[in-house]
Image 1 (spheres, rainbow, N blue to C red):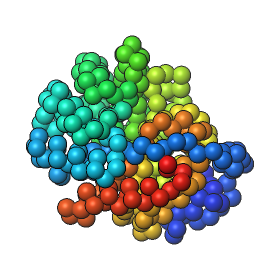
Image 2 (image 1 turned 180 degrees about the vertical axis):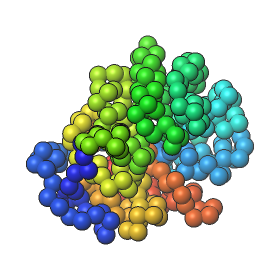
Image 3 (image 1 turned 45 degrees about the vertical axis):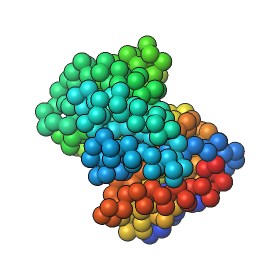
Image 4 (image 1 turned 90 degrees about the vertical axis):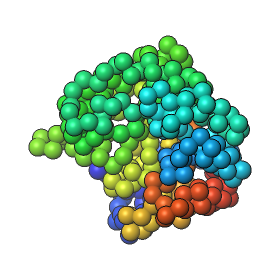
Length: 308
């Protein structure tokens, strides 16, 4: 899929110019008139990373977000057998004590953070799945890769690893996943005319495997792409979403609903996308304002009929 025209109804303020959309995406959007039940609000814990300085602060922060109305959290920060300096068991207890649940988590193979591109050691798979199982998570999501990996060789190694992770996850009734940023929306092989986007390459290569995609709506839009079209062209492939927003200047992330992404159109695709869980996230908030950002996001979300 090349960078396609934006749906006429999908206007991102001054960031995008309105163009005619292709017929398939338009008809899919028009036909999706029933919203799914999204009454359970979730968030990605990374939003609050600066407040997570120890066991006490983690427990207090989780409790604060539960009091806001959040009911689930997506984990991050797994390393050396634990989360954010806590044992997996202690971290799970903190989530449970806050009356939250965690359907999915982000897990990072160390190779993907390095400058050296090569095979990813599958030894990390069992550790990731063991930790996810303790937390009651179904989805084990790989979230990022170093710039050195963002080429055909790197993506091929990633695909091999994701397939292995998916096969091992299936034996535990779990699912592997990949979380996008904006870099997947560049040509896989820039010097080859007609080269597909890396995201398209991943979607096609992993079709039929036990690997799904967690779509970060913000990063798709930031890359100049239309999330609605990707959902229409790859139905059922996006059971997890990251819901975050950006201002008209495109450089500033803001609480959900305060930016330019038309969430009504996005959530109209929930059933087609196969959505099961979404997580509100804000990568960057003003200093010491992350908790307030999450508060403002859920206050807005609670007023939207399509998110109830």
